Image (cartoon, rainbow over all chains, first blue to last red; front, top):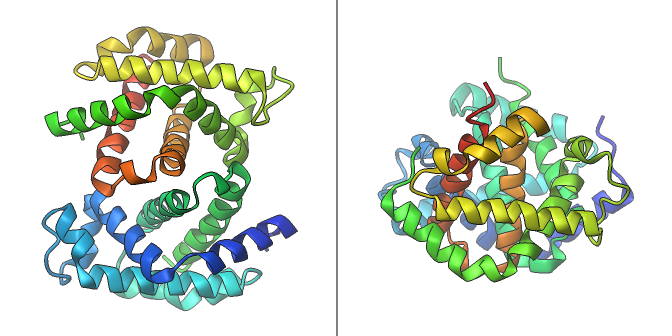
Length: 147
Length: 143
């Protein structure tokens, strides 16, 4: 089981309470698709992904970015149980979506940078460490059911 | 994933903007490396203070960013431009190259906190590629 310090719990809740899922989610996903273009392979039916401007303006990308953030919200609300909370999602990503689990880390790095850009100096090293620990658990749980 | 002319131009333009804060970026990035990836501290077991105000961390951050500045100036041939630094990292420091990726990420995070408007996705990809190529050049002499 993952051990969380009081600071880590408080920090994760604080981050999620302050970010706008409809803004951060789309920004993180579109950034991932631009910075790591091979991740576009999973979004073949999303329409125009021809360049950065198209990706950033794409409504399906935005919608999916928001969906992802709401998924993380579930993890945030079940911090002592993320592995079990994500079991079904993990099966989905493995069996149906066939997403290479290395890609989860790429998205989580982009999410970190989006939140860092929003928070500025308040995104201290300690806050970053807590957030990245949370994301690492999320990423690990998502990859758990792959076989 | 080598650097296109557009990548190089983008990196140079960003560097021109941020280089006045290079020392602060370096210190903050190093401090974040130690905080987010504690295993990286093993290379600095000889320092008593690894906190954000440590003079050792600040001085070393400045040195690291000096290396980044050198890389920007040698962006057309990073392997040759960073040869000496690569030999130093390979034979003396023997830093596991996996750490270069971790520090690159921390540098990106610091730039995001300090210059959020300047790190658009389009600029981010160019800078990420540059840092990856820098890391590759730094690993050149390892084996």
